[in-house]
Image (cartoon, rainbow, N blue to C red):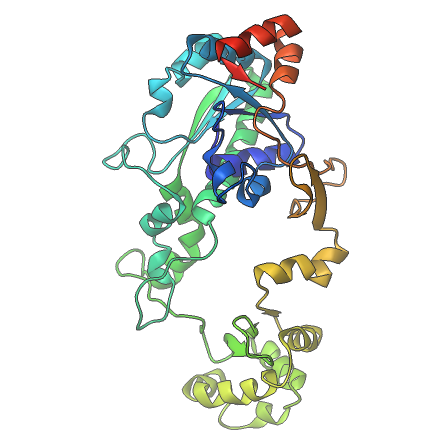
Length: 386
Protein backbone atom coordinates (compact mmCIF):
# COMPACT_ATOMS: atom_id res chain seq x y z
CA UNK A 1 0.00 0.00 0.00
CA UNK A 2 2.44 2.64 -1.21
CA UNK A 3 1.95 5.91 -3.01
CA UNK A 4 4.06 8.64 -4.58
CA UNK A 5 7.74 7.79 -4.05
CA UNK A 6 9.17 6.79 -0.67
CA UNK A 7 7.29 3.50 -0.34
CA UNK A 8 7.24 2.84 -4.09
CA UNK A 9 11.01 3.29 -4.33
CA UNK A 10 11.41 0.65 -1.62
CA UNK A 11 9.12 -1.89 -3.25
CA UNK A 12 10.53 -1.24 -6.73
CA UNK A 13 14.01 -2.12 -5.48
CA UNK A 14 12.66 -5.34 -3.96
CA UNK A 15 10.86 -6.11 -7.22
CA UNK A 16 14.07 -5.51 -9.18
CA UNK A 17 15.76 -8.05 -6.91
CA UNK A 18 13.10 -10.64 -7.66
CA UNK A 19 10.34 -10.14 -5.09
CA UNK A 20 6.73 -10.62 -6.22
CA UNK A 21 5.36 -7.17 -5.42
CA UNK A 22 1.60 -6.61 -5.52
CA UNK A 23 0.56 -2.96 -5.33
CA UNK A 24 -2.81 -2.45 -3.61
CA UNK A 25 -4.56 0.61 -5.10
CA UNK A 26 -7.85 2.38 -4.65
CA UNK A 27 -10.40 1.58 -7.40
CA UNK A 28 -10.87 4.35 -9.94
CA UNK A 29 -8.08 6.48 -8.49
CA UNK A 30 -5.03 4.38 -7.71
CA UNK A 31 -1.73 5.77 -6.56
CA UNK A 32 -2.02 9.60 -6.88
CA UNK A 33 1.33 9.46 -8.70
CA UNK A 34 -0.50 8.04 -11.71
CA UNK A 35 -2.01 11.46 -12.38
CA UNK A 36 1.03 13.67 -11.71
CA UNK A 37 1.04 14.62 -15.41
CA UNK A 38 -2.28 16.19 -16.42
CA UNK A 39 -4.44 14.10 -18.73
CA UNK A 40 -2.95 10.68 -18.04
CA UNK A 41 -3.39 7.82 -15.60
CA UNK A 42 0.08 6.53 -16.36
CA UNK A 43 2.47 9.42 -15.78
CA UNK A 44 6.20 9.02 -16.40
CA UNK A 45 6.62 9.61 -12.65
CA UNK A 46 4.47 6.57 -11.88
CA UNK A 47 6.09 4.43 -14.59
CA UNK A 48 9.61 5.19 -13.32
CA UNK A 49 8.82 4.13 -9.74
CA UNK A 50 6.55 1.13 -10.27
CA UNK A 51 8.20 -1.23 -12.73
CA UNK A 52 8.14 -4.98 -12.09
CA UNK A 53 5.00 -4.78 -9.92
CA UNK A 54 1.49 -6.11 -10.23
CA UNK A 55 -1.55 -3.95 -9.40
CA UNK A 56 -4.80 -4.94 -7.71
CA UNK A 57 -7.62 -2.45 -7.11
CA UNK A 58 -9.45 -3.06 -3.83
CA UNK A 59 -11.73 -0.66 -1.97
CA UNK A 60 -10.47 -0.98 1.59
CA UNK A 61 -13.21 1.28 2.91
CA UNK A 62 -15.75 -1.44 2.12
CA UNK A 63 -15.81 -4.30 4.65
CA UNK A 64 -15.53 -6.93 1.92
CA UNK A 65 -12.57 -5.14 0.37
CA UNK A 66 -10.74 -4.96 3.69
CA UNK A 67 -11.50 -8.64 4.31
CA UNK A 68 -9.96 -9.51 0.95
CA UNK A 69 -6.70 -7.83 1.91
CA UNK A 70 -6.54 -9.74 5.19
CA UNK A 71 -7.31 -12.98 3.36
CA UNK A 72 -4.45 -12.30 0.96
CA UNK A 73 -2.01 -11.37 3.73
CA UNK A 74 -0.84 -14.88 4.78
CA UNK A 75 0.34 -15.52 1.22
CA UNK A 76 2.93 -12.74 1.50
CA UNK A 77 6.04 -12.04 3.56
CA UNK A 78 6.02 -8.24 3.76
CA UNK A 79 3.49 -5.42 4.03
CA UNK A 80 4.68 -1.89 3.14
CA UNK A 81 2.78 1.39 3.57
CA UNK A 82 3.68 5.07 3.42
CA UNK A 83 0.33 6.79 3.85
CA UNK A 84 -0.07 10.00 5.85
CA UNK A 85 -0.49 10.05 9.63
CA UNK A 86 -3.58 8.19 10.81
CA UNK A 87 -4.70 6.72 7.46
CA UNK A 88 -3.78 3.11 8.22
CA UNK A 89 -5.22 3.44 11.72
CA UNK A 90 -8.51 4.69 10.28
CA UNK A 91 -8.66 1.58 8.07
CA UNK A 92 -7.86 -0.55 11.15
CA UNK A 93 -4.93 -2.20 9.38
CA UNK A 94 -2.22 -1.60 11.96
CA UNK A 95 0.53 -4.04 12.90
CA UNK A 96 -1.50 -5.50 15.75
CA UNK A 97 -4.34 -6.41 13.37
CA UNK A 98 -2.13 -7.82 10.63
CA UNK A 99 0.23 -9.74 12.90
CA UNK A 100 -2.79 -11.42 14.50
CA UNK A 101 -3.75 -12.70 11.05
CA UNK A 102 -0.17 -13.44 9.98
CA UNK A 103 2.29 -13.66 12.95
CA UNK A 104 5.27 -13.86 10.62
CA UNK A 105 4.46 -10.68 8.70
CA UNK A 106 7.19 -8.07 8.26
CA UNK A 107 5.24 -4.82 8.55
CA UNK A 108 7.17 -1.86 7.17
CA UNK A 109 6.16 1.80 7.46
CA UNK A 110 7.51 5.11 6.16
CA UNK A 111 6.41 8.22 8.03
CA UNK A 112 7.63 11.77 7.52
CA UNK A 113 8.63 12.24 11.15
CA UNK A 114 8.02 8.79 12.58
CA UNK A 115 5.12 7.71 14.77
CA UNK A 116 6.32 9.32 18.01
CA UNK A 117 7.61 12.71 19.07
CA UNK A 118 6.24 16.27 18.70
CA UNK A 119 6.14 16.15 14.87
CA UNK A 120 4.51 12.71 14.54
CA UNK A 121 1.19 14.06 13.24
CA UNK A 122 2.75 16.49 10.75
CA UNK A 123 2.30 15.76 7.05
CA UNK A 124 5.47 15.41 5.04
CA UNK A 125 6.77 15.22 1.48
CA UNK A 126 10.26 14.74 0.12
CA UNK A 127 11.42 18.35 0.29
CA UNK A 128 9.83 18.87 3.70
CA UNK A 129 11.97 16.00 4.99
CA UNK A 130 15.03 17.46 3.29
CA UNK A 131 14.45 20.83 4.92
CA UNK A 132 13.96 19.13 8.30
CA UNK A 133 17.18 17.13 7.88
CA UNK A 134 19.46 20.03 6.96
CA UNK A 135 19.82 19.51 3.21
CA UNK A 136 18.52 22.97 2.29
CA UNK A 137 20.92 24.63 4.72
CA UNK A 138 24.05 23.34 2.98
CA UNK A 139 22.82 23.91 -0.59
CA UNK A 140 23.44 27.23 -2.35
CA UNK A 141 26.03 29.98 -2.52
CA UNK A 142 27.67 31.23 0.70
CA UNK A 143 26.06 34.67 0.48
CA UNK A 144 22.69 33.45 -0.82
CA UNK A 145 19.61 31.82 0.75
CA UNK A 146 19.22 28.08 1.34
CA UNK A 147 18.23 26.25 -1.84
CA UNK A 148 16.02 23.29 -2.56
CA UNK A 149 18.20 20.29 -3.56
CA UNK A 150 17.44 18.74 -6.95
CA UNK A 151 17.33 14.97 -6.23
CA UNK A 152 14.35 13.56 -4.31
CA UNK A 153 16.56 11.84 -1.76
CA UNK A 154 14.10 12.43 1.07
CA UNK A 155 11.71 10.01 -0.64
CA UNK A 156 13.84 7.62 -2.68
CA UNK A 157 16.72 7.62 -0.18
CA UNK A 158 14.29 6.67 2.57
CA UNK A 159 12.92 3.91 0.34
CA UNK A 160 16.38 2.43 -0.14
CA UNK A 161 16.93 2.28 3.62
CA UNK A 162 13.53 0.67 4.15
CA UNK A 163 14.29 -1.96 1.50
CA UNK A 164 17.53 -2.83 3.29
CA UNK A 165 15.75 -3.03 6.64
CA UNK A 166 13.12 -5.34 5.12
CA UNK A 167 15.84 -7.56 3.70
CA UNK A 168 17.51 -7.76 7.12
CA UNK A 169 14.18 -8.57 8.79
CA UNK A 170 13.51 -11.25 6.17
CA UNK A 171 16.87 -12.89 6.85
CA UNK A 172 16.10 -12.83 10.58
CA UNK A 173 12.69 -14.39 9.94
CA UNK A 174 14.36 -17.16 7.96
CA UNK A 175 16.36 -17.94 11.11
CA UNK A 176 13.72 -17.41 13.81
CA UNK A 177 10.35 -17.61 12.06
CA UNK A 178 9.38 -14.30 13.63
CA UNK A 179 8.12 -11.22 11.84
CA UNK A 180 8.51 -7.68 13.11
CA UNK A 181 7.49 -4.04 12.75
CA UNK A 182 9.82 -1.68 10.85
CA UNK A 183 9.44 2.10 10.94
CA UNK A 184 11.58 4.61 9.04
CA UNK A 185 11.28 8.37 9.52
CA UNK A 186 12.00 10.39 6.37
CA UNK A 187 13.64 13.13 8.43
CA UNK A 188 15.95 10.66 10.15
CA UNK A 189 16.67 8.73 6.97
CA UNK A 190 17.63 11.94 5.17
CA UNK A 191 20.21 12.81 7.84
CA UNK A 192 22.13 9.72 6.70
CA UNK A 193 23.01 11.61 3.52
CA UNK A 194 24.06 14.70 5.52
CA UNK A 195 26.66 12.98 7.67
CA UNK A 196 29.68 14.10 5.65
CA UNK A 197 28.51 17.71 5.75
CA UNK A 198 27.82 17.43 9.48
CA UNK A 199 31.21 15.83 10.13
CA UNK A 200 33.17 18.33 8.04
CA UNK A 201 31.53 21.56 9.08
CA UNK A 202 29.46 21.49 12.25
CA UNK A 203 32.17 20.94 14.91
CA UNK A 204 30.25 18.11 16.56
CA UNK A 205 26.97 20.01 16.32
CA UNK A 206 28.23 23.24 17.87
CA UNK A 207 27.70 25.35 14.73
CA UNK A 208 25.96 25.24 11.36
CA UNK A 209 27.86 23.83 8.39
CA UNK A 210 28.25 26.70 5.91
CA UNK A 211 27.13 26.71 2.30
CA UNK A 212 29.98 26.54 -0.22
CA UNK A 213 28.20 26.69 -3.57
CA UNK A 214 29.98 24.77 -6.31
CA UNK A 215 33.49 25.53 -5.12
CA UNK A 216 35.25 23.58 -2.39
CA UNK A 217 38.76 24.65 -3.27
CA UNK A 218 40.82 26.20 -6.07
CA UNK A 219 40.73 23.01 -8.16
CA UNK A 220 37.34 21.72 -7.03
CA UNK A 221 34.75 23.69 -8.94
CA UNK A 222 32.37 23.99 -11.87
CA UNK A 223 33.97 25.30 -15.06
CA UNK A 224 32.15 26.68 -18.15
CA UNK A 225 32.46 24.81 -21.44
CA UNK A 226 31.96 25.55 -25.12
CA UNK A 227 28.36 26.06 -26.16
CA UNK A 228 27.33 28.33 -23.34
CA UNK A 229 24.13 26.42 -22.63
CA UNK A 230 22.49 26.08 -19.23
CA UNK A 231 24.31 22.81 -18.56
CA UNK A 232 27.49 23.30 -20.60
CA UNK A 233 29.81 22.86 -17.66
CA UNK A 234 32.31 20.36 -16.30
CA UNK A 235 32.82 19.65 -12.61
CA UNK A 236 36.43 19.01 -11.64
CA UNK A 237 37.65 17.53 -8.35
CA UNK A 238 41.45 17.63 -8.37
CA UNK A 239 41.95 17.00 -4.67
CA UNK A 240 45.54 15.77 -4.34
CA UNK A 241 48.94 16.98 -5.55
CA UNK A 242 49.01 14.15 -8.07
CA UNK A 243 45.59 15.16 -9.42
CA UNK A 244 46.74 18.80 -9.59
CA UNK A 245 49.68 17.77 -11.78
CA UNK A 246 47.39 15.60 -13.90
CA UNK A 247 45.04 18.55 -14.35
CA UNK A 248 47.87 20.81 -15.52
CA UNK A 249 49.05 18.16 -17.95
CA UNK A 250 45.52 17.43 -19.17
CA UNK A 251 44.86 21.07 -20.10
CA UNK A 252 48.25 21.35 -21.76
CA UNK A 253 49.67 23.69 -19.14
CA UNK A 254 52.53 21.86 -17.38
CA UNK A 255 54.04 25.28 -16.74
CA UNK A 256 51.43 25.87 -14.04
CA UNK A 257 52.98 23.12 -11.92
CA UNK A 258 56.13 25.20 -11.38
CA UNK A 259 54.38 28.57 -11.32
CA UNK A 260 55.16 30.09 -7.89
CA UNK A 261 51.58 31.37 -7.65
CA UNK A 262 50.24 27.79 -7.70
CA UNK A 263 53.18 25.68 -6.48
CA UNK A 264 51.63 24.61 -3.18
CA UNK A 265 48.06 24.18 -2.02
CA UNK A 266 48.25 27.34 0.05
CA UNK A 267 49.39 29.42 -2.95
CA UNK A 268 46.66 27.91 -5.12
CA UNK A 269 44.09 28.87 -2.50
CA UNK A 270 45.41 32.43 -2.23
CA UNK A 271 45.33 32.82 -6.02
CA UNK A 272 42.20 30.77 -6.63
CA UNK A 273 40.46 33.36 -8.83
CA UNK A 274 43.47 33.64 -11.14
CA UNK A 275 43.78 29.85 -11.24
CA UNK A 276 40.07 29.48 -12.04
CA UNK A 277 40.52 31.66 -15.13
CA UNK A 278 43.58 29.72 -16.28
CA UNK A 279 41.58 26.48 -16.20
CA UNK A 280 38.43 28.10 -17.61
CA UNK A 281 40.35 29.39 -20.63
CA UNK A 282 40.88 25.76 -21.60
CA UNK A 283 37.36 24.46 -20.75
CA UNK A 284 35.64 27.28 -22.65
CA UNK A 285 37.28 26.10 -25.86
CA UNK A 286 35.90 22.55 -25.55
CA UNK A 287 32.51 20.91 -25.20
CA UNK A 288 31.76 19.36 -21.84
CA UNK A 289 32.07 15.88 -23.38
CA UNK A 290 35.47 16.68 -24.92
CA UNK A 291 36.72 18.20 -21.67
CA UNK A 292 35.55 15.18 -19.66
CA UNK A 293 37.22 12.72 -22.01
CA UNK A 294 40.52 14.60 -22.03
CA UNK A 295 40.72 15.11 -18.29
CA UNK A 296 39.28 11.71 -17.42
CA UNK A 297 41.94 10.00 -19.51
CA UNK A 298 44.57 12.17 -17.83
CA UNK A 299 43.53 10.86 -14.40
CA UNK A 300 41.51 13.85 -13.18
CA UNK A 301 38.23 13.09 -11.35
CA UNK A 302 35.61 15.04 -13.29
CA UNK A 303 32.30 14.84 -15.11
CA UNK A 304 30.40 16.78 -17.68
CA UNK A 305 27.20 18.20 -16.17
CA UNK A 306 24.79 15.76 -17.77
CA UNK A 307 21.19 16.93 -17.87
CA UNK A 308 18.20 14.58 -17.79
CA UNK A 309 18.15 14.38 -21.59
CA UNK A 310 21.87 13.64 -21.73
CA UNK A 311 21.35 10.60 -19.50
CA UNK A 312 19.31 8.84 -22.17
CA UNK A 313 21.94 9.60 -24.82
CA UNK A 314 25.06 9.03 -22.70
CA UNK A 315 27.33 6.58 -24.55
CA UNK A 316 28.64 5.09 -21.32
CA UNK A 317 25.19 4.31 -19.85
CA UNK A 318 24.06 2.94 -23.21
CA UNK A 319 27.16 0.76 -23.54
CA UNK A 320 26.43 -0.72 -20.10
CA UNK A 321 22.80 -1.43 -21.05
CA UNK A 322 21.48 0.86 -18.31
CA UNK A 323 19.03 2.62 -20.62
CA UNK A 324 16.30 0.13 -21.44
CA UNK A 325 13.10 0.22 -23.46
CA UNK A 326 10.03 -1.46 -21.97
CA UNK A 327 6.64 -2.08 -23.55
CA UNK A 328 3.92 -0.37 -21.53
CA UNK A 329 0.34 -1.56 -21.98
CA UNK A 330 -1.01 1.99 -22.46
CA UNK A 331 2.01 3.99 -23.59
CA UNK A 332 3.77 1.56 -25.91
CA UNK A 333 7.58 1.38 -25.90
CA UNK A 334 9.13 3.84 -23.43
CA UNK A 335 12.77 4.35 -22.42
CA UNK A 336 13.56 3.91 -18.73
CA UNK A 337 16.57 3.97 -16.43
CA UNK A 338 17.54 0.48 -15.32
CA UNK A 339 18.50 -1.10 -12.00
CA UNK A 340 21.84 0.17 -10.68
CA UNK A 341 22.66 -3.04 -8.80
CA UNK A 342 23.98 -5.87 -10.96
CA UNK A 343 23.80 -9.35 -9.46
CA UNK A 344 25.61 -11.98 -11.51
CA UNK A 345 23.33 -14.84 -10.41
CA UNK A 346 20.09 -12.97 -9.77
CA UNK A 347 19.33 -10.88 -12.83
CA UNK A 348 15.66 -9.88 -13.09
CA UNK A 349 14.31 -8.59 -16.44
CA UNK A 350 12.83 -5.09 -16.29
CA UNK A 351 9.05 -4.98 -16.78
CA UNK A 352 6.81 -1.96 -17.27
CA UNK A 353 4.66 -0.52 -14.50
CA UNK A 354 1.14 -2.00 -14.32
CA UNK A 355 -2.17 -0.45 -15.28
CA UNK A 356 -4.52 0.27 -12.39
CA UNK A 357 -6.03 -3.03 -11.24
CA UNK A 358 -4.44 -4.90 -14.14
CA UNK A 359 -3.79 -8.02 -12.03
CA UNK A 360 -6.76 -8.02 -9.66
CA UNK A 361 -8.45 -11.11 -11.12
CA UNK A 362 -5.12 -12.88 -11.59
CA UNK A 363 -4.05 -12.41 -7.96
CA UNK A 364 -7.43 -13.28 -6.45
CA UNK A 365 -7.70 -16.41 -8.57
CA UNK A 366 -4.18 -17.59 -7.81
CA UNK A 367 -3.95 -16.64 -4.13
CA UNK A 368 -7.52 -17.15 -2.91
CA UNK A 369 -8.68 -19.69 -5.50
CA UNK A 370 -11.66 -17.51 -6.45
CA UNK A 371 -13.56 -18.40 -9.59
CA UNK A 372 -14.75 -16.07 -12.32
CA UNK A 373 -18.26 -15.81 -10.86
CA UNK A 374 -16.93 -14.88 -7.41
CA UNK A 375 -14.62 -12.25 -8.88
CA UNK A 376 -17.49 -10.86 -10.95
CA UNK A 377 -19.63 -10.62 -7.80
CA UNK A 378 -16.88 -8.73 -5.99
CA UNK A 379 -16.69 -6.31 -8.87
CA UNK A 380 -20.48 -5.84 -8.86
CA UNK A 381 -20.33 -5.09 -5.12
CA UNK A 382 -17.71 -2.39 -5.76
CA UNK A 383 -15.14 -4.18 -3.58
CA UNK A 384 -12.70 -4.47 -6.53
CA UNK A 385 -12.13 -3.25 -10.07
CA UNK A 386 -10.30 -5.01 -12.88
